[in-house]
Image (cartoon, rainbow, N blue to C red; front, side):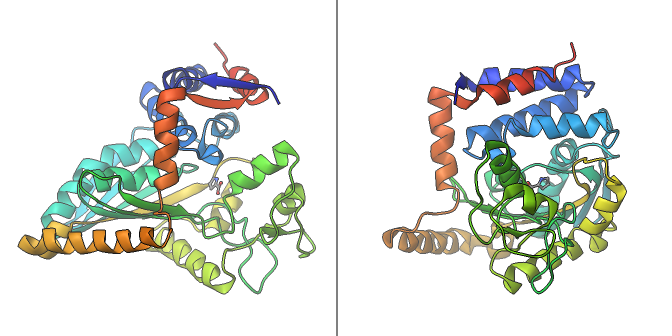
Amino acid sequence: MEKVTLTLAEAYTLARQVLRGNGFSEAHACVLARNVTDGERDGCPSHGLWRLLGIVNTLRKGKVSPDAEPTITDHAPAIVKADAGGGFSLLAFERALPLLIEKARHNGIAALAINRCVHFSALFADVEPLTQAGLVGLATTPSHAWVAPAGGSAPLFGTNPIAFGWPRGDKSPFIFDMATSAAARGEIQLHQRAGKALPEGWGIDSKGNPTTDAQAVLNGAMLTFGGYKGSALAAMVELLAGPLIGDMTSMESLAWDDGAGGLPYGGELVLALDPARFLGTDAVAHLARAETLFAAMQRQGARLPGERRYQARQHAGEYGITITRSLYEEIAALDCK
Ligand code: PYC
C-alpha cells in the first residue's frame, strides 16, 4: 500500500487548513488539528488524522457547531462547568483547564463537567496536562449506543473510555486511556476500511452471533472488555458523565443523532486531585512509593501504560508520521478552499 510521510508541522497544517476550509473557527480548527496530529504522533491512528473525515462529516450533517464559544462557569467551590454550546469538547476543555487546576490546588480535588459537546477525541490528551501540573487526573465520557451490555446482544452503552493519569515529576506520566469496549469504535472502522478481520471477542452481528467481520460488528454490536466487569464500568461511565452532570447517555446521544452518522454528543467528566494538598509535607515520600511500585512492575517485564505512546511520540518527532496515500488524498479532498 502506498504511503505518505509528513512532518508533524505538515500534518498539523494540513489538518488545520482542512478544518478552516470547512468553516471551523480558528480556535476550534487549532485545537482539533493539534489533537488529531497528536493522536497520529502518539501511535494511535484510531484517534489520528483519519478522524478528520468524521469531524467534517459531522459538520456537514449539521451535528456540530463550527464556532461555538464555550462558556466557563465557576459552579461550586470544587466544580467547574463548561458549556461547549454544541461544539467539539476540546476547546471547552482547553478554556476550562486553568480554573480546574486552580480549584484542584485549592481544595485538593475538583471536577470539570463539560456539557453539550460533540466528542471523538482520545482522553489521554485531557489527563496529560493535569499530570504536567502535578495533579492526578481522571476523565471519562459516554459516546453513542454501540456496545451491548454483558448478557445482552443489542447496542446500549458507548465505547465509554476511562483515562487516568499520575504525575511523575520530570519522568513521562503514568497514563492509561482505555475504552470499556473491547476496542475503540475507531479501531473497528479502521479494520473495516482496510478489509481486515477483527480479533475474536470484539463484537457480534445483528443477530447476536460472534463475528470477526468488522462491517457486521458495525451493523451489530460491539462487546465490552472483560465481560460483566467491563460492562459494569461502561454503565458507571454512562452515569458519571451522563445523568450526574445533566447530560446524555449513549442511547440518548444516538437518538439525538437521528441517523445522521455524526459523532457522539453529550458530556465529559474530568476529575483532578492534588497530591500536595492530600499529603502536605509527606507528598515527596509518598510519591516516591509510587515510583517503587512502577519499578517493581517494570522489573517483571511489564510495560507502564503510556510507554509505547511516548516512544511513538519521540519517533514521530524525528521521522514524522506515515499514513496511506489513499487516506492522505481523502483528507486533502475535504479541503473546500
Ligand atoms: O472510536 O470509540 C471510538 C469513538 C468514541 C467516540 C467517537 N469515536
